[in-house]
Amino acid sequence: MIAKLFALVAVLGTGVVYGTDVFCAMVQQPALAHVDDRALLAVMGNVHRYGDRRMPVPGVLGLMAAAISAVFAAASGRWMQAVAAGVAVGLLVVWLLIYLRVSAPINHQLTAAIGHSGPPMNVRELQHNWDRVITIRAVLQGLAVTALCTALLT
Image (cartoon, rainbow, N blue to C red; front, side, top):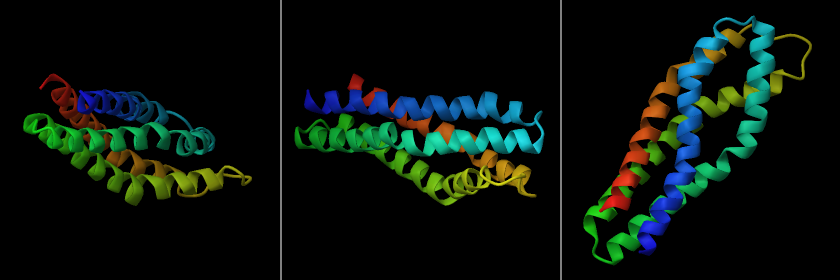
């Protein structure tokens, strides 16, 4: 029962990040293609200013709760539940690596640039590089939520 409780907490935390990534892939990405560079910098610099401060909470909560769920499920011999939660942990770790290696450095550049008088020459390129991983990030989060729901149902 404890493993399922942690799986539920993991679904809630991971679901926040999943929903955010899906929104970015489906709505934000095409919408930003229609704004000028100054607006792009202002919007995305400020989005990342707040997102990078606040989104780690549900993200870390989801990852840690998934790992705890996997441990408790394995300790109680519920192997299907343990494997499902463990798969979610693996997917979330891959997501985290992509975020840390690709998205976070771009976030920092955009956030730092909003204090300057004009947009950096490469704001469109930075956003393009950020956009190129958002779909895979959303897919990884969606698969993790699916694995966690499987852990809840087994």
